[in-house]
Image (cartoon, rainbow, N blue to C red; front, side, top):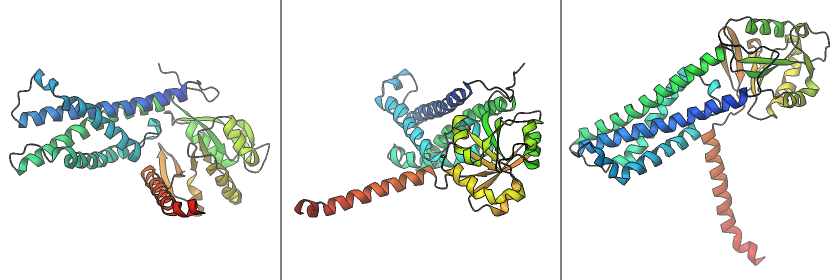
Length: 320
């Protein structure tokens, strides 16, 4: 029988377990790319008429390929895919993203490594591209779906949770708390307490969760309680505090996931997306408006531009 984590306790190893499962996800991608390239290498040898026996293992290109190509895929996924936390990933979104990234990666490999191979006719190009894409995408998607399905089961069983803070203490917060905790399947929330935006001591939510502080103490209580997720559930009359709350949360970095109840959607001026968790519909506020690959390109452009200006202006610096 699966032992579910109660709201009053959470094993300290849960976060390390999540990190280890995410690293398993990364390693699985590397091994999938390695196996796919090894199978494709044998396929290319068969096109050349070489016998498929142990003599293939004597080809140094085989070993170069099963190390360099998977390493390239790992770097590619690190830039354009999501590796932060396996328990934050959606299987359908991951499936679509993997197909798209696999296609782009195979196109690059095709023009970089395969285009100058032995070719009998134009159909060899099409067959080589199709075989490599099917091998890589098929293996990667299969392994990813298995790992994500196992992760989803752990989340629903209550074995994996995120330390969550509720901002708000009135009826909206109580309704949200009861809706989430009243479900048979876990949603991954481990509520550590709540912060009242108005500093009230006798909020209705205090019957279910401890009051950790008010908005003025928000940053300190998030850090001291190792909060990973924040749900804003304030009343309509408390909307004037929303901008102050978001400014504090955004200063805490991208490792805090911020969600808000849907009735505030019309006043939000940031990028959001709807997130339905088995009935508890929340709006996820995205803090990283610029994707990782765009951040990398921006840094490279900044570095290149600074270097060019330093080289151009260096004669004037020395003469002065």
